[in-house]
Amino acid sequence: MDLELLKERDTPLLSRKRYTYYMTFQGPTPTRLQIRDAVAKKAGSKPELTIIKHVYNRYGIEKAKVIAHVYSKKEDLDRYEEKVLIEKHAAKKEEKTEEPAAPAPAEAAPEPVPAEEAKPEKKEETKEEAPAEEKKEE
Image 1 (cartoon, one colour):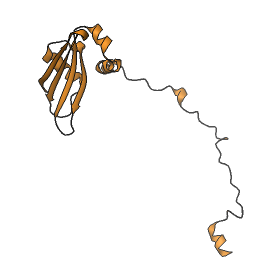
Image 2: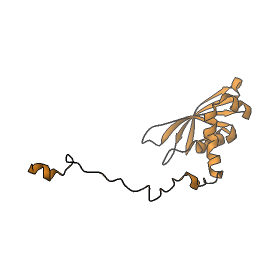
Image 3: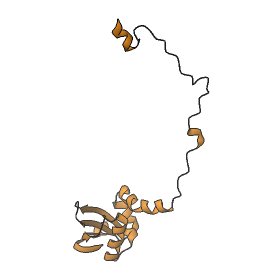
Image 4: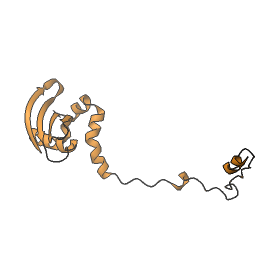
């Protein structure tokens, strides 16, 4: 993955810098975490203080435009960024450490029906429901 800086804007009131990069890559589009680590390395900041706002890529082209915010403090990141976006950057770490889910308890399975209750009901035949061959003969 290669990043080329297109634009850098300093916003001192929000304690952040906004970077716009042109990214080239091989294969599928890199994940947010991979992009975040590359942007943090390129900007000289910590990955925990970097948020990837947008990744604009086009179908079939291994290039994308990336917009990232790099904060100076964790408190400012929590204050100004949306919680959903922060969770996207943190959720991947938690998935790796979680244990696989336990199977559902046996109580949830339906109970077997006793043989006496499971007998099919007999259907009485009427003259109207007679087979089609008998109707033709009449």
